[in-house]
Amino acid sequence: MELKKGLDRGPFNDEQAGKLDIALSGLDSGQLQWLSGYFEGIIQTSLNKATASSLSIGSESNVDHEPKAVKLHILYGSHTGNSEALAKNLHARAKDMGIDTVISDMASFKTRELKGVKKLAIIVSTHGLGEPPVQAEDFYNYLHSKKAPNLAHVQFSVLGLGDSSYVDFCQTGKDFDTVLEKLGAQKIVPRQDCDVDYTEEAEAWQEKFLGTIVESNGQNSTVQIQELPNKAINGSPYSRKNLFEATILEKINLNGKGSSKETIHLELDLEGSGIKYEPGDALGVYGANPPQLVKSVLESTNLSGEVEVDTFDGSKSLYNALTYNYELTPLSKNTLSDYAELTGNEGLKKILLDKNALREYLLGRDFLDLISEEPYKLTSEELISVLRKNNARMYSIASAQEVVEDEVHLLVSVVRYNAFGRNKDGQCSSTLADRLEIGDKVKIFVDKNTRFKLPKNPEAPIIMVGPGTGVAPFRAFMQQREVLEKKGPSWLFFGDRNFTTDFLYQTEWQQYLKEGVLTKADVAFSRDQEQKHYVQHRMLENGKELFEWLENGAHFYVCGDAKKMAKDVDIALKQIIQHQGGVTIEKAEEYVKNLQIANRYQADIY
Image 1 (tube, one colour):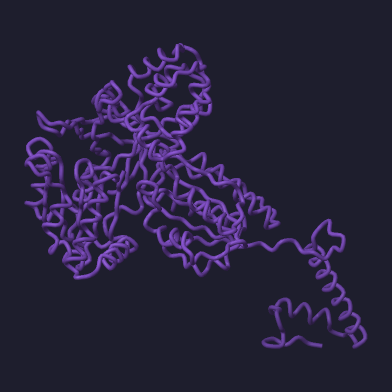
Image 2 (cartoon, rainbow, N blue to C red):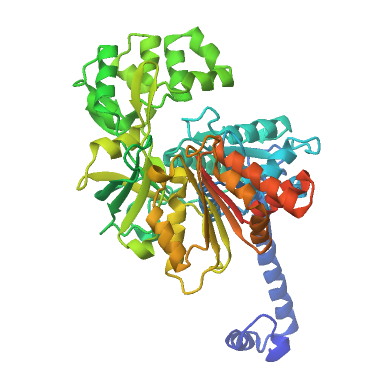
């Protein structure tokens, strides 16, 4: 017998074929038949072992198979990119653990595919005032419509991102959680609501969720679940978990004498940090509670600031904990809820059940107001337990790193107001304005915003609407475009109270216009005339040209106040499209929605 080279040698290479040729040479037909049976026995034994390993252990009949591994679907809805980053991190972890996984943003997901989804992870932020992000709207509305299917075949869990200083904290995540259960889906692990500092909560949810998936799939994964990447941008060791202490290089009040506002321009030194950022990103900054407020809380509770307390950041004096680790202002829903539960205060519990009453109660109040109006003898441990962990304040970066290099610039509106008989200050803004000077250090980290970005095509037109400190990212946009050889047209809408005292970065805008970096600028100063004018009025006055820019591919950006300004700008934009495009309001809304889906309408609002 001879194994021929080429087609007759089957799956064997030349060397293997040669050895087989030698081994089989000289064997007669009986010997070859015996070998055939021998090899058949080996093959059957292997198959039996494989079959046995696939049978369920402990079954009386021993015929039930282990659950077949089911694909995991990850859907995300993101406003600034944090939900997207967490979804991608979950996807990578799942793959490392051998879980068959697919990931999609909600705007791209086809609802007809729900019938094939068995296991589902929802990661979503809450946009604006309790609303889903734009890319999540259609999927959100579909699940809440009469078209929504029965989802009894789906197992799911939700990770929600939000800010507990808002009444509608993580409302979108809560809504998804509720509607999925209503449609018959079964919860794998409980929903996790994450605050601004979401890292630890997100890690815990991911570990629990993936562990449950592995167990239900009958898998034995040896891959350890690692922490969320503790790195900042482009390999820097600094991040929201490892803060950098930046030195203040410059601090200027940009408002003129007699202004009713106080807006400071800050320049911070990043030298040696390796931190990288892009126009559109935000800077997380940690402030401290005013000394007088801390003192008043201690006096009101009759507690000593020198007593040691256990905090999430180790043991320290109560005074230091109240100054640096916990928030006394503004009063949050979570703190009110915990205080009501601790004290058994029925009046506060009733307020918590009514969103409108809750919003009205929280407006202008801080923790000192609460304990003064609803006194209770707190221990130092109870005091700490009801307070919200100190969170960073996010400020849109007002510089382009290609221009300022090892610096980062901020534009900060200093919050000062009188409420309930006391003068009050914003925690972080007053820290920067009143208690830190040039040469002092402040703890910071970069928060990437993957969505609020200049167009990939540098020649695409851009329209920027940024009243007040909302103009900050557009200063960064202009700095970035200034260094480009080719750049598209740019149009700024800026507004504030008074021209002579509140025209932020006025000389810079004039220089950009002179150089042609900025093509067009329209301004609105609300209190320079009897009838108030705002940026949306300037948009409407220039409606014909603005619509032409959109038709020519312009990207539209708005930054600033979410409660009123951003909504008024959105209404004005739809009116312009309706009138200039000669379409119904429904078609104008569809036009805007398409801009948003195509990332040509971006909002950075707060």
